Structure formats: structure tokens, C-alpha cells
Image 1 (cartoon, helix red, strand yellow):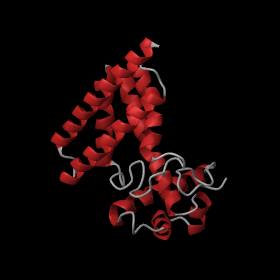
Image 2 (tube, one colour):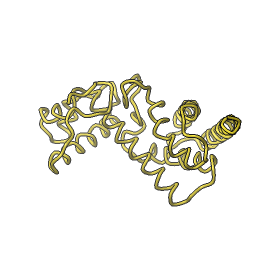
Image 3 (cartoon, helix red, strand yellow):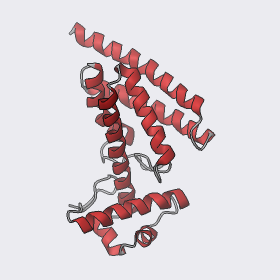
Image 4 (tube, helix red, strand yellow):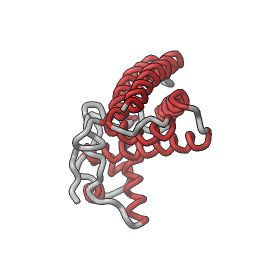
Length: 216
């Protein structure tokens, strides 16, 4: 089960407890080093040293540096979706406004608190297909958010919804990057503007999709 170097799928998944612990230590070490030295200076040798894991063990799991970073991005995405799903189930927010509030807040919280997330959230700079080989990262994330959005809003779960979410994610990505370039903790006004933009676009787009489906 060799790993495609552009995806977050490890070449060998850990099964035993000891292997799983080493796997997670490698991802933790990767995240720490991303914060300390950045993506361009990251090496598998230093990750293995920091994790106190033999370099050969690292290559049992990951084919190269990009595979390691891809696995970290995939872990970040699963953590993000888990946090979003848990909050949506707990708070049962109403419609798009609630979904936007929760998703933006959880992304911002992870950016502020999760090691390495500011360098690699769901993909590395210049690595457009970190999560899935045939889709750029935001398209892959949009695909994962489709069902959540459909269940919360009642809109049809289809490719048009995924396209709308992809556009929304591209907008959010740009504005939130600006927010964290402006202030290390994210400039509050820009975060608020991000929510405003997403609410306006998604409400308009979902109304259009609902009307179109009702007319069929």
C-alpha cells in the first residue's frame, strides 16, 4: 500500500499500540518543527530525531516529507470536522449563520492553539493536493462539509452545493490568512468580515439552489 506523495494517506497504517504511538509522535514532532523552522527547512531526519523514532520507522509510514505533511494535514482536517460536528450537535444552530459561526470560530481556535496549524492547516503552501490526489485541498474540504451543510439547511446534497462551499472556502481562506498576517491571534474585525462575506454569499447561493430544485 504505497503512498501517493501528494496525499495524506500513509503508506502503512499503524495497527499495534506501539506503532500508533510512534506514528502520532512523528506527526507531533512534524507540527512542532513546522512552527520552529517552517515548511521549507523541515526534514524527515530532524522529525525522526525530535520524535525519538528511528528514521527507518518514519519511512515505514511515510514515503517522504510531503507524505508526512499530508498525514498531518489529514489529522488536522479530522480534528476540525470533529470539533465542528460536536458543536453543531450540541448547540443545534439555525441555518447558514450558525454553520458559518461554528466553522470559522473552530478554525480560528485551532489556528491559535494547535501546534503547526499556522503553517499546515489542511495543506502546505505550494502543495495543492495534500489531502486527495485528484482534488485541490479546498475542494476536498468542501466535499467533507457537504453533508453537514445539507443536513443543517435542508438544501440538496449535490455537486452544486459542493461548488458553493468550495467558493466559500476560497474566500474564507484569503480573508483569514489576511487576519492572521495582520495580527498573530487573528485580527477580530477581519474575522467578523469573513463571517459576513460567507453569510451573504452562502445565503444567496443556497436560496438560488433551493428555488432551482423546487422548480424541477
